[in-house]
Image 1: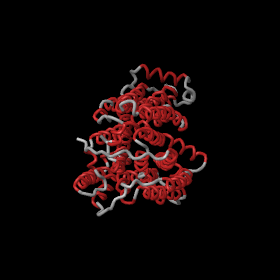
Image 2: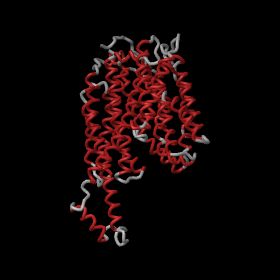
Image 3: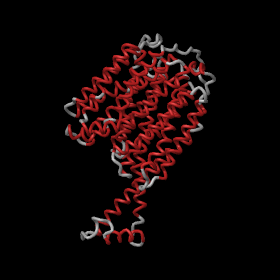
Image 4: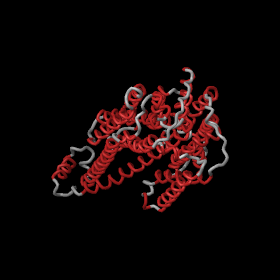
Length: 525
């Protein structure tokens, strides 16, 4: 049963000031979200510039993810200790400074250290910005506020690789980090001038829950490293992955036990007693499994199967961005006119349809056959993200907003990480399985094999005949096609799984309580 509370909605800020707050917090947050993916395409340049191996260069991404995952659940607690405005300003300043140091890093060790600082400072800005916008806008405008926030969160993972590739190709990978400096400086100035802490934010701290903090760092840190390194280390066939899994499980179990029994936890898990917030938290974990998975799988499909350049793959993703943009604007206006749970269910069905359409892909499909389903996935993500976030956070008292936002974003991040790790693992293993079955059909009694060999032998395929090595050329051609088809079939398996997840989730949202009125949303009834 949900705890009842009758807190009035926060007073609306002046119209001009309200949108200045949006501009300030979104400038800082979008740059942080971009940094999650913008360095991916530059890893090879970074590796060559700093004379590092492939596995060593991967720590540029892992270090940032680990830092982000550790700090997100601590955001509400840190805000209550230091004050939200002061903590937000500290995060922006540290993120900007560490970005400057990343760009000027003389070696890989320095870069990894600075990326950890980036993650620790940037990770807190997501839940902070979310809580600030929820409190700045009155209840009737909270849907629109979350629409603006959600659009920024959706655009970051998609635009990051495109922007990173363009900067790396035309300038240097160091400018990926230098770009954060002017944006962070402007955001710092705006926050200093316009943001005011609510009186209930800061509280006296009688003791620090050091055991809970230690268990959290151990559990989340090991989990993120496990997810990032799992496929590269062959998962549980690796002693490293087994050790990380054991430490992560022990750390998280002890963390939950400690937080439930202590009076001043670093993360207040008791807020999960609120049914609407608890359902929304689990729901967003599963949704991020699918959404983040498609963010990674579609560019890979475009480049590995369709033969697209990174820029053309980015254009494919831009169609999904258009769908997200339109749906987000529409949802902000419809939030108080239609049951928000209906919007989420429709979003799941739209995302399921868009993903299911991709199960009919083949190597000959054109640009719009690939990009078209992305529009429906974008519509789905816009319809899901805004009302789900608003419903979940508006169901808790405003005094718990910082803690709720931090917990909500933590599971969102972990859900996305798990989704990416598992789907990439399924893709790799599935390609091996399909290749095994396809090669069983490559034998002298298959007429299709002889037809293909005839093309090679007759010279119908330029560059393969007349060289005296038709047999070798034929085998290379067949093997390459088998690999391509096996990878395609594995992509289709992943797309089918994601479509099923979205379809099954569509009725689950109705486990959340329906808000009776606009005021009841804000009050958490």
